Image 1 (cartoon, rainbow, N blue to C red):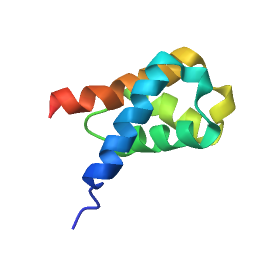
Image 2: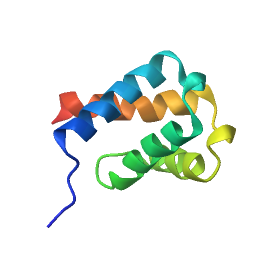
Image 3: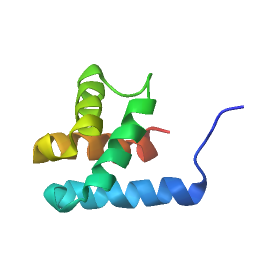
Length: 83
């Protein structure tokens, strides 16, 4: 059995990602980590670059640039249209 997130959890993640696209540096440390963990779990869907950024953000969320946060957020918001 796979651990699929609930509809409410997915909706929260998409709202968080939408906010991160607009104002990436206003996300809290825990929010950046949550987005990074979400992208890191997407083995087949996330690109190699996105995986590298996700690993970096999980270990050092303050050291991630705004552009890198936006790349992770773009991946999350793009999931909805891809599925």
